[in-house]
Length: 143
Image 1 (cartoon, helix red, strand yellow):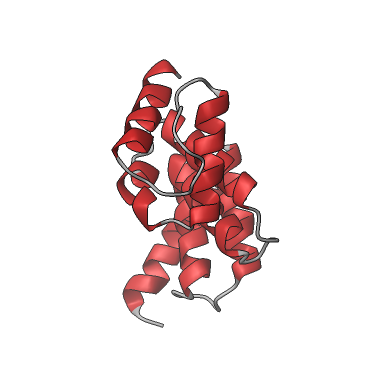
Image 2 (tube, rainbow, N blue to C red; image 1 turned 90 degrees about the vertical axis):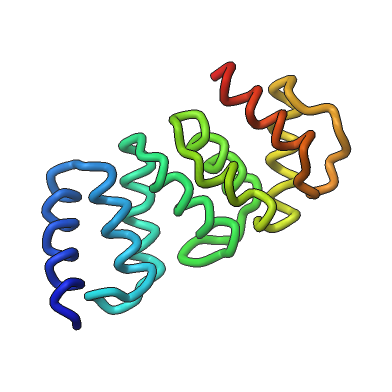
């Protein structure tokens, strides 16, 4: 274990245990990547979920990725899409910047949710392009 991982783990754990959402998300990343601790999807999900519940956009996005990929939780593109949009609503930019790299099943669910919110009128095809991006931007602006 590198000294920097050990120090980071100590500070992230202290912040997380004090209720800091970013500390919770960062501690989840440490477990997700096995940095300073044994890799554990279950622990990563635990800390990402806590961060998401604390309103942290990174925690929401990271938990969404876990649902999208079925790591530490059952694969659930609907829940992943909900988390990606929730993170976007609270100012997270990760999903908007990385949407084109996401799983088409998850993107189809994002499109469906944007359609239900009255912001998307295109095909529910799981392809991310300018119309999908404009719909996401409109959704964020309204929420």
